[in-house]
Image (cartoon, rainbow, N blue to C red; front, side, top):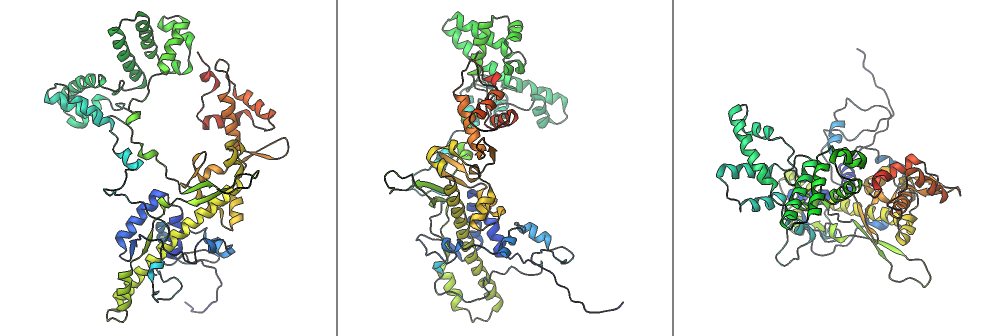
Length: 534
């Protein structure tokens, strides 16, 4: 084997831990960021919550407006997760023209610009908004999240009713087990035999005994409120609700009402696809009522609750906390168009700073004998600084992108979604000097509170449809126009997708029938046959 020296030119991109953390924090949602902050507060002793507003550093919004270089843009193509970073370090070696992160042997370096000097006052490392804590103090008002947590669940509601029943211990246990087996909608999805086998295994005699007790308990469950709970399918759920109304009708004799409920029960006993298609002719033949009576029965069924447990579902999961707020400018010249400005929501911005006491102790013991411990603590201190900086940069980027969106979509904030204009990620990226991937991370799971409601930032982006004038109409505006057409239609003669397509063409928008159907389905609007009044 012959040994020799060779010279090779290659390009390598070092994805530092600071940059990895910055990219990862940028794509986190508000809830995920809160969890990340809590974890960092537990792990890093140099990080603490601040009660006072801190002075913003030079890396704030003013500096963020400076266009980035081409080299910095390329960084955004790099992996964003620590796991991917660790996996990529196990490669055999660098190749020509290959972008590679740091090697696995290198320890994370949080030294920033290379200096290890401690700043005189570490209190300057902080953001400028109060964090939203998870625990409420005695003097704080209960917010919407706490009210959602205090809402009674379906199981608790049913258990409370079951306590009023005089049952044996075995039947009470069977009823409790069925209640706990219900899903969020109030349905019992698993067959009784499967539930029994899950408890008794392969013992056939014990399985039969459990099925008997579960059958008795199921009958009791069907008599609890809300009506329809414990049903195995939609048809049974509707029949349980109709029987409850029929019992009420028998208490106050109304023959017409009782006959209508009885007919509705026969309709619900038929295959559900007939009811979904509103196949009145077939239902008349199978159920024995007249055409008018069958239509009235279908209308009665349509007013029932298909998901009995809906009102007990925890509403906390539906709470959306906006990251930015759009407010109208207070001073506007007479006759001028309304002006809007974007501000960060202070409730979602963690207010962090470096722990002054610990930082001062570390500074005073700089010349200690244990150099290894000092270096480790110095690294943790620098890590806290970079974490605060990256969080501030995250919100600065969100604010810049949101401001650019509001500037591009001024008509929306004045006239609503019908005035939405086409917008793609590339336009915002070019305007701010960022990469499309960065804009995509910023607009995912980030929300904006507007005068028309709270929307995800991605809502303001949409493709364009051609118009007769040669311009483009936003797909969001077209959806809003379709919704407006359908809301103004006659219940007895609703518009078909083809008719809506022709109406859009009259407005100068070229939209095919299939596109109308896709937009209508995206708006969760039924087709014309199901929108037609009986």
